[in-house]
Length: 201
Image (cartoon, rainbow, N blue to C red; front, top):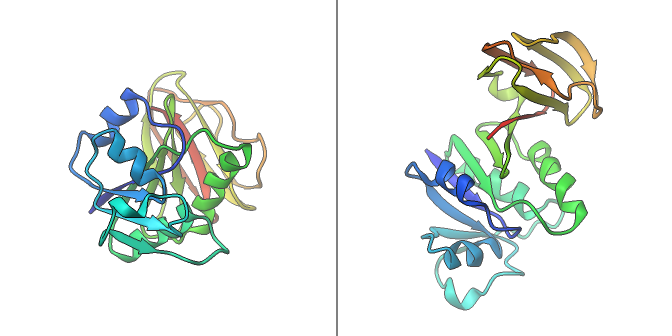
């Protein structure tokens, strides 16, 4: 099953909406993101989060409160959907807002458990989470096409099929994996910790 999480940040551009909404998927609003999705004419199945920034009057019977204040609404929503059996989760509307939200979105990828392919869609790229419990991530990268790999926690990383390969080297959050290049073939990425892989949108 596939789900879309619509966050309470800047509205996704037309390219992102076309990319993500072209296939059937259940749309969930992350707190106030539900209102923003509805304003775009999107049918929202349910609202998730601590419900402190959504207009509850318009969502009667369609809310699930996730009250744990030790995690962000996004991290809790990802965990909730994985618990319901969703195997693919696409996140939109996560941009904008305060500067802390930028790193907070990646922290949510690290906080949430494995069990699903989770991607954050930006207007110019896609962040794909690679979780050690879910195996590696393989994708086609065109000749000289740029992609980047960030370790969200200290771990060993493997990258093959690219201009610069990494074979079990220990990485932490750094620029070590930035601006790698494809060779017009499949690239394989894995790690024994959580990784964020940025690929073209």
